[in-house]
Length: 304
Image (cartoon, rainbow, N blue to C red; front, top):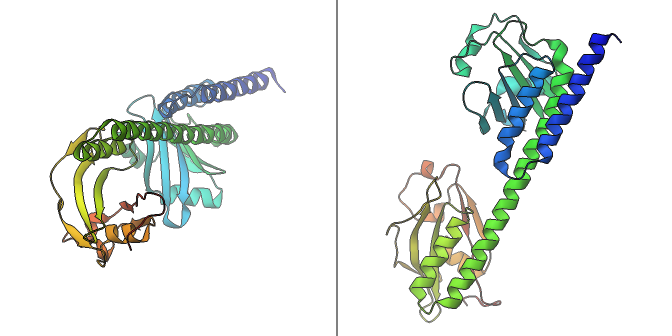
């Protein structure tokens, strides 16, 4: 091994170690952005002249669905963008790298917000494809494939760590919501106050985007919608608007899904549309949404 080869090997091992250390320091999901920056910086230190890098996770090969995490020296970081990526899926399925190290494919520049990309390389690894782009022709070569694969495997660990931290944050938010709901119920003698605070706390826990609350009237054998106005905006703000059938009552023999959940005592989950919704909104309105009908019982009590 020549001195130059030895020095390059040392640079690569040092760079991979630094990427691993940055992952170990992750304490919040947002720390993934810093790990991505470290990956790009260390790749350049290893001799890969990249202005941007991306890791594309293959989610559903049959649907060509991928999830992209991209970082660049110019422009914003992309985290978790889901889209159709036929080329990346094909690259992963065949196990064959592809790209344009000579910089003759000008069309690729349009995908990088006007950056004058001169070459790019896409390399498959165990769970997806890592891609690197350069502003210089021959800035990245297929000789860098093995290095890129090693970076990709470590990068993938960082993404898994991000999801673990995200789940942990959600669990903490949920536990805090339970505590706040319990305190609200114990400290309030007003049913209206309990219902208002219950809805706000559950929605703020970021589990559901919106929430409706119904109460069971055992004497009348009916279920009444008492709150149907709580919505969480993208920025986390809770909005309350008097919409959606507050005060409506449904008998126990109704086919309404809320009544069915109350009478059966079982959780009902609906993906997208169900004909029992009883709404005039078009089917397309429910695309990519999920609906949960959750019965809250005292012991095993349920309507008879």
